[in-house]
Amino acid sequence: MKKHLLIIFSLTISMFTASAQKFENWAQTPPMGWNSWNKFACNVNEDLIKQTADAMVASGMKDAGYEYIVIDDCWHGERDSLGFIHANPEHFPSGMKALIDYVHSKGLKFGIYSDAGWQTCGGKPGSRGREYQDAQTYASWGVDYLKYDWCNTEGLAAKGAYLTMRDALHEAGRPIVFSMCEWGTAKPWEWGQDIAHLWRTTGDIYNCFDCEYDHGDWSSFGVLQILDMQDGLRQYAGPGHWNDPDMMEVGNGMSVNEDRAHFSMWAMLAAPLIAGNDLISMSEETQAILTNKQVIAVNQDPLGIQGFKYQTKDSVETWFKPLENGEWAICFLNRSKTDQNIEFDWSKENVQDELNKLSPDFTQKVYQWSDLWNTKSKGTTKKKLKAVLPAHDVLMLRLKMN
Ligand code: GLA
Image 1 (cartoon, rainbow, N blue to C red):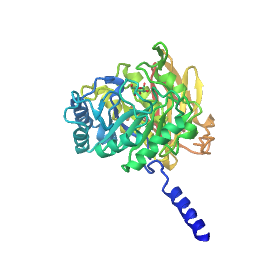
Image 2 (cartoon, helix red, strand yellow; image 1 turned 120 degrees about the horizontal axis):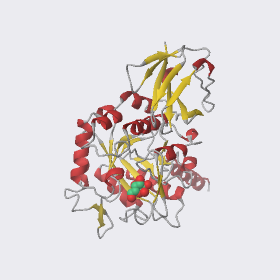
Image 3 (tube, rainbow, N blue to C red; image 1 turned 90 degrees about the vertical axis):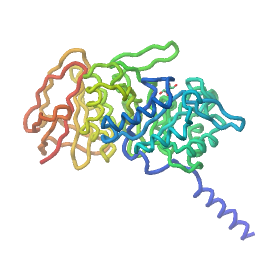
Image 4 (cartoon, rainbow, N blue to C red; image 1 turned 120 degrees about the vertical axis):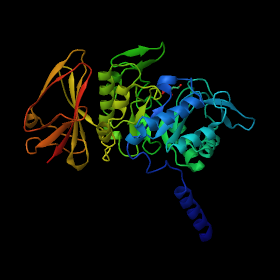
C-alpha cells in the first residue's frame, strides 16, 4: 500500500515538474523586428521576405537592434493528407524551411503567423485542433516567433486556446517567442504573463495619427487612439511580458512629425518595435526614425518599465519613463494640429512613478538633458525648459545626473 502511494506521489510530482510553460528568458526587452501585414497584407512571397531581410541588414536596422522578420497572414498553402501545413507553393516555391534558412543566414530570426480558430483572419487554415502538429512543423522549420491571431474562434475561451498553443510550442522544444493577438478583448494582460511574451492590447492600428477607420463591423485606430487605450496597463508589462499596442505604421503615409511622434511614444510605452513599412524602398527620413539608437535605447532599457503620462496641458501630454542608473526619459507630445509653446519648470514638478516608487525628485537633484531627436540640443534641469512644439510632434529628452 505504502509503495503504491509512493508511486502515485512521485508520478504526481513528475507531472508537475514536467508541466509545460512558456519559454523563459526570452524577450527580456521588447521584441524588435518587421512584420509584413501593415504594408503588404496578403501580398507576401519569398522574394519580398528575402529582400526585406537584406534591407534590414543594409539599412542599419539590424545594427540598431531589429531582429525578427515576421511573415503575417496568407503565407499558407494547404494541409496535406496527414494534416501538415505547407507554404503556398506558388508564392513560396522554395518552401518555408529554405526561406527561414535564408533569414537565419543574415543573422536574423524568423516569425510566422497562425490563428487559434479554424481559419485565419485572411481565410487560410488556422491551427484549431492542429496545435501540436503545427508547433512541431514550425519548430522543424526553425521558426523563432509566433504571432497567434483570434479570428474564427467561436466557442473558444481565449486563455485556454492560448495555453494550448503555448504547451504545444513547449512540447515541440524549440524556443519560440509567443505573441498573442487577441486584440485585448478578454484582457490578456490579466492572465497572459505565464502564457506569452507579448499580447496585443487593442484592435488593429491604421496609418493615421488621429482617426478611427470604420470597416463596417469593426474599426482600426490611429496612433493617438491606440495610445489612449494603453491607459491603466503599465503594471502588466515587464521583462518577458509586454503590452503590444500593435505594429508600427512609421513610413506608411503619415507626416515625418507624426512618424517621429508615433515611434517615440512606442518607445516610451516599452512597446514591441515591429516595423510595418516597406524596408526595401523606404525614404531616408523613415530610415532615420526607425534607426534612432537613442530612442531605441529608451525602449530597450533593461528595467523594462512602461512609461506613464504625467500631465496634459493645452493638448500637450508629458510622459515619463524611468531608466536604469537613475536616468529618465521625458517626452512632450503635441496632440493638436497647431504648434504649442511648452514650459516646464523642473523644480516645481512633483513627478512620481507610484507603481515603482520612483521619482526624479527635481527639487533635490539636477539632471543634464539631451534631446534625442536633435543631438546638438542639450541643457540642464536647473533652468526652466521652454520650447515650441510643432503640431503632431514630440520633444523627447534623456535625463542624466552628473
Ligand atoms: C488581424 C490582426 C492583424 C493581422 C490580420 C491578418 O486583423 O490583428 O494584425 O494579423 O489579422 O489577417
